[in-house]
Image 1: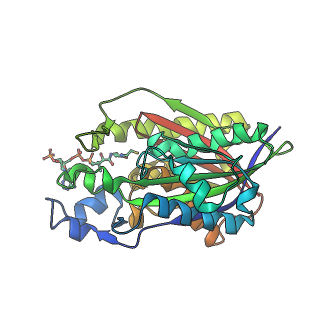
Image 2: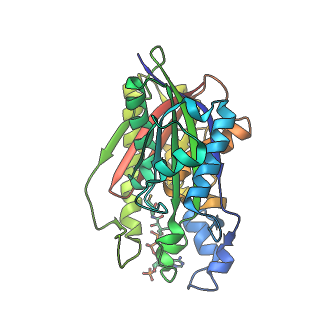
Image 3: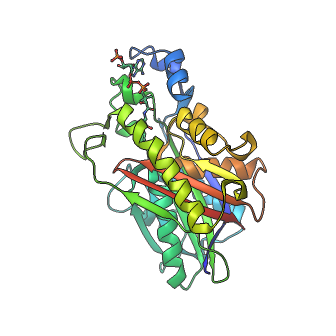
Length: 311
Ligand SMILES: CC(C)(COP(=O)(O)OP(=O)(O)OC[C@H]1O[C@@H](n2cnc3c(N)ncnc32)[C@H](O)[C@@H]1OP(=O)(O)O)[C@@H](O)C(=O)NCCC(=O)NCCS
């Protein structure tokens, strides 16, 4: 035994709401098409906010909810593929913005939409060896920076945002037992650093997700020796409402044990899982001792699942 629990969560979304109706004025699409294919009605887009600002606000929010001071944080990881700068990393920027100690391990990690799960697992491993046992895991992406706003097949799907979780590691707590996967693929989902935008083969990514999600759930349950009924809440990466609904149906997950916020935020990539967690905490839907199964998938290709307890 030895592992992590979630002490507190936070989120930060930009103010500007971009509706399907507005997008329909610039590309050949409609509110009806977007809602029926994806479940998305609107998303948030940065106009004046920065990646740094969203990360800092989400992290402050999480620290307050956790009741933890910045100097207690031993590890700070930002999962992102759209930081303000490559150097300094977003995590190094957080060291200064939040007042983390100079001995805090700070770095960014890119696993696209699966980033939060990769970062959570990495933080759990590092905290086992760290002198300070609290970790700050932030998922943040500003996909509005990398979208081709004339491509109706991608620009309708994504939104900007940041979410964060403060975790604590203890020798007597169970591991989140993350299962993570990767299959190098540069065709299905791609975002070059220069001279280009995010491109995606939507239908093939959809099929990949329909295999990845059950694979993650099955492996996590197997590793923990649990069944789906033993899980208190399922938190899915918010990429498409149909993917979430199909998973809920397959595992007979009752409506009170999972949720969708994709309608309001679209796909916020690495931020989607911690944003859901933060909304659940705020609305009192999670309580101490709850076991939450997290599932994510995305570019890379990457995928992952984990079971975390609420402290
Ligand atoms: C992107 C996605 C919503 C498209 O839905 P779909 O049902 O697969 O639609 P298709 O790509 O087959 O396109 C069907 C038609 O709609 C059109 N279309 C695409 N985007 C459109 C839009 N925004 N509005 C209207 N029509 C659109 C296509 O051009 C195509 O037209 P055609 O039949 O004349 O060629 C869906 O594939 C999806 O969600 N994939 C997963 C994406 C994902 O999760 N990515 C992130 C991973 S982290």
